Image (cartoon, rainbow over all chains, first blue to last red; front, side, top):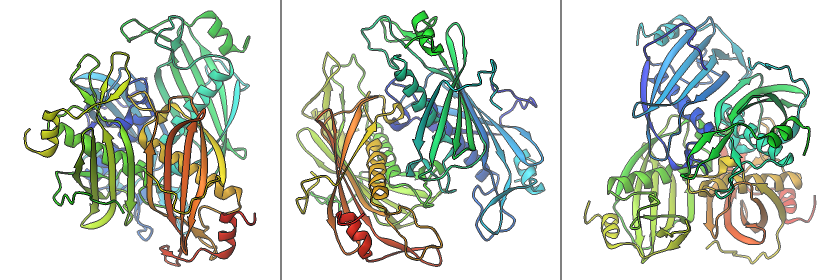
Length: 148
Length: 148
Length: 148
Length: 148
């Protein structure tokens, strides 16, 4: 099971996602891999909602980006074509340079899947490489919900 | 980190996968979600190689199928378009009705990702539903490498 | 170029789609193949909006489904991560058993792509096979916009 | 139907592709959109086979890349999980700056789909933009099969 290391009980962001036909497979249900783009799209929608850009412009020295360190899903029940999924995003942990998101996916109150993504804060260097960086204070506050 | 609960040190199966253009994203590297279909395709190639069918025929009472209980990847380094990935499959644990696969993904010896998929053995019931079942002995032996 | 054989000038349905990160590729733009699930999802949203079911229940003798005969996209300009696409659906032609949809995809008024999908009306037979069928009159009216 | 404007009757390149589980959908067959990454991967394998690079290095002034102008598939019959597809690539037309590829996809001799991709030869400009360019003579020869 995905553990909630810091017991963050209330969701930080809620979104809905319709299951599209391309998300399904020959078993008649959403393919297990299709949940990962779904939870990433909710993560990105959350970041936009608190004013954090997802991809840095090459010429903005202050912007950071968030490559994934790990991703996981636990599956509790199937979802099917045209189902509308309720996705709850939790900010489980904000470290010095990493963030752990947890996702609860339900369909009409029925548990479908739980997801977890750990991202690390990186800056673009002059040469176009990524280097790990401390999460800037203003971004930390936006993630925590104290501003934005 | 994905743990190897029973310390299975030698791979049970090896496969290669070319990174296709569709696997990449605007960060110029393989999208984190694209590793999941890759490791599943290696799992299925392994099953075929030991004579285990992946999807049961509706009229075959003895066949089982393998829905996923959880899936996870940890990312160590990027992979890029046209890279050839070496994927090592480990059968980490065979329980009464579940199997834990671990995957080590490297590119020219460089660590790219580690994956883990837990599947549960199910039979198709008359009504087309899946019900958890003990792994049949002959399939257990094929997974363990004692036959096939 | 996708031709509009019957010159249907006004869109039958409008929808918006956000470009998600998984839609992009290492060229930094939406992968050409990603437009096909996008236009199919708009076709399905249109069908729902006029009360036509997309997938038949196995036990409903009156329901039809719509396998694709052909699909095409012409690309006029790139779309990028987080762009919001305006997708206009046109019902270009309704034949005895086929429907031709055309899609105009723009981003802030700029042409991105034109799509075309030709589907054929099929019924599920008792054995689970599909057989071509004349489009039922009530469905034809819903497609044409005279009811629903 | 995809027309073969110059009647190129013999395939320029042959490849096999296994249908993976992620390629399928809830109708139990390969999703129509999944054929596009498949034919692109065969196009790229063909280009590698004749020594043409698919993606230019940013610092190589002589390299060209091939954005898509249009893509189309016509569907003749279903393909299913684990089917092995035979993909025949035809170079239908080489223009001043564009190439038309045609793809015949069969499974055990049975017609599955016909594809067509039109690409345009582009150079990367200093600013990272793409500009249309005449196909270099040595690349034209490699496409035509006179060298490489």
